[in-house]
Structures are given as C-alpha cells and as structure tokens.
Length: 141
Image (tube, rainbow, N blue to C red; front, side, top):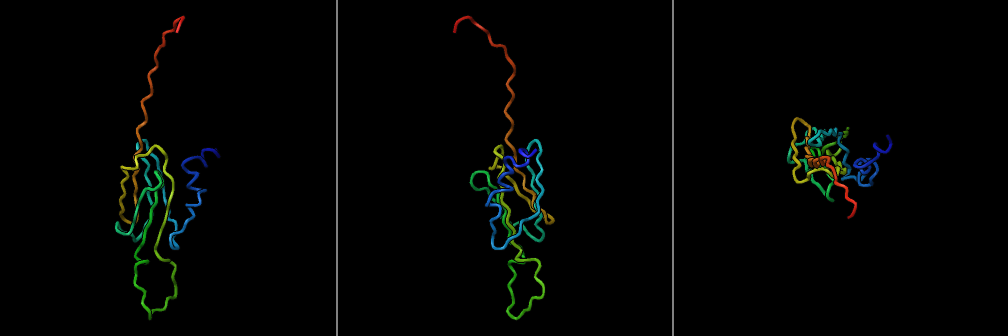
C-alpha cells in the first residue's frame, strides 16, 4: 500500500521541493484528479478566475503547472482606503505536479467554467498484447 501511495507519479506531488515553491504568496488550489481508461481529468477550484487569468503549461517534459492571478490581485489599491479585513489574499494561485509517463502532453486541453478549471490529459494507448504463438524446437541452432 505504501509503495503505491508514494510511488510515481505521486512522489513528486507529495515530496518534491518544487511543490512547496510559492508564487508571490500564492495559495494551492483545491483539486480533484480522476483517471479514466483514456485520460487523466483534473478539476481545480478557481473561483472568480477567467480564461485570461489562468496559465497552464507543461515544463521539464511532464511537469504540469497551473498559475493564476485573480481579480483581487489586479485591483488598484486606493491610497486613501483603509483595509479592515483582507482574507482573500492577493488572489494568486499556484499548483505544480508531475504527470505520469504515459500521457500525450501535446494534446492537453483546458477549460474554465463556473469557477472550475478542467484539464484533460489524454493517455497513450496501451500497446497490443502479443498473441501467444508456438515456437518450433530444433536440435541445432
């Protein structure tokens, strides 16, 4: 159980120093990751973010990173304003993790709607299983 839980691709997800890298005080976005026979589907909570506020990219071969700068980060702060509560932060988010080796990084699609960023990462088709065959046995090679 421990080997499968901490095995690849999740080893970097939990233990890599890169996962703890901050992006100007950003917060990690809540995410669901579901694997189907044909793809990996990631759904990330990004309330208040539009398509122009989010950047999704693949680096280092299979490292997927999600960066966002929301409306709160873009607001012009008035010099004469007094902030009493600032719980929403800067509105920046950052998430990075390694994808499995059997994905098609050139065919990744991302879509944001109703505060949820959905990323579909297609998987490589599994190679066909070789059919059993009989090998003739001879007395000399």
